[in-house]
Image 1 (tube, rainbow, N blue to C red):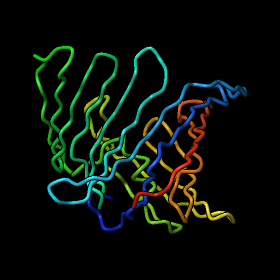
Image 2 (cartoon, rainbow, N blue to C red):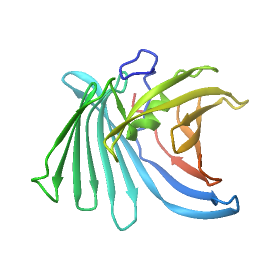
Image 3 (cartoon, helix red, strand yellow):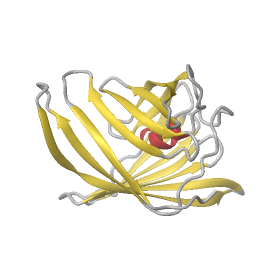
Length: 222
């Protein structure tokens, strides 16, 4: 099992400029081809420090839609252990504080009187919204595989999902497979920059297929 703070995880040179992405459905659940734009998102990285140690803030903003979504998360630079996360979804604001295997969850708006919850799991956790950064940080060697404990913000539960580095193509892009109980994802990771150059997703339950289209005009920030 790959845990936060593991020495296996590389220190990725995260981008200094926003990454924009579009979500496209290209196959329906029955297998028919389709092209449907499902919207977009923007991701920013800010290098900072936490209690004197290097950290990175990850800010994901969904573009458009009737309920704007912004997720801001602070993680340790080395080993990607999460520290805190704040989600805004429409009028709702939820804060998560991470302490190893313990997650405290507080809904602060629209009901500031909502009872907080604190849950301790059996292992230290990553959170699901840092999955891209986790995949980018994996050892890029064919045959590497691990089980990763991911905290799911949506249902306040832990998932034990898998990542597998399947190999590289002749352009130096590595294929990394991610699987959970709902989807199978295939990432393309540039072996030199560790940028995500492609990501496609299929569902276990049917023939639906989706692609993420990435664009970044960035420089590295360390």
